[in-house]
Image (cartoon, rainbow, N blue to C red; front, side):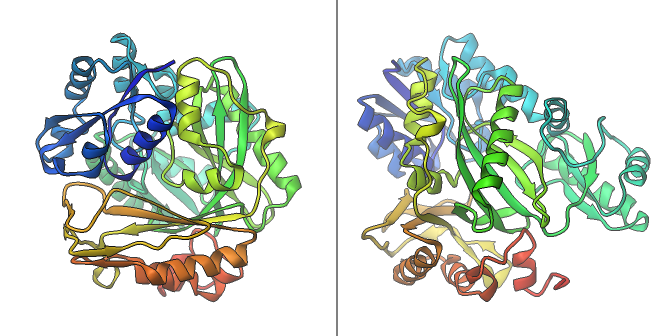
Length: 451
């Protein structure tokens, strides 16, 4: 069994992992940048090691510094959390070479799934439904245009090594293609240092549905149901739910079986997420696989009763899954709202600064995952998410009312947040009736076509 874990991350996910390790009797090591010296995760861990200056490129993304901290501390495992190095195959490979257990999939699996085009081809070969699109890497607008003509408009142009909504543009007609391609490719080069693109058919107004899977080192794979992540702004998720309101037991079984098949096709190990686009007619298509724990994992934990972080650690220790598929039952309804330090009225501009006063709600069915406190300074160097508010109730209507009430109780002073904006979403007629898709926010803000 793993005895000491270094958490190669910060913020609420670092705190979440530390708490899971404590419950398992595992020692923890926090790493921090100079800007995070007073951060909560550094105070909660058994040890804390500074790994560099404030910029993430010199600290949380420094593989050499993190590996050195792991060796110096005597930790026998690294948990990467999400973001930063969590899906970096080179980092996972370095851990393997240094005989450090990487709490995640093997490096070669991360590499094979990191290229979205290659991953899509693997899934197609395994019989998992995929969106019609290019099968080879595309580097020029001319080559992309030829593929778009074969696929049929509208199309979406994506960075092969992308994520987080960057390096993505749609083209509704041949006239739009060249400009959209060049814009997406330029953004991909800036964000990921790679200009490899691919083109696929653009599904109009789909739901973004992801299935949580767990796979051990002995070939056992299960799924833990779905999360509806359709409420997103500029491809950034804002609210997640489990289960999806419109998915029947029959469709859930079908999609779950496809998710398990996808995980087995690539020899997956540990926790991962298969992301699908769900069309209005019930058709679904593989989009990508995330090879890490997800921000929104708490909603799955609440409706299944499974602690995903603990399962990650057990799997990495070589233990078999604690559950079989027949043990997984979806109970009630869970909703998560991401609380960000940003100002929606000013174009969602980040709002770093010191929190002068703070209050989070509590009570039955309410969970707060956060690393901020009164007097904490939100740094300008990192992601703006400062907390996750998650609620559980026996059905969706009750969960919505509980979330509305909980959002109304939050007090965060000294910085701007998106709490009021989230409250607006929770009271929108389309959200209340479950009439959401990936273009819902655009329509709410008056940017969509209303169709």
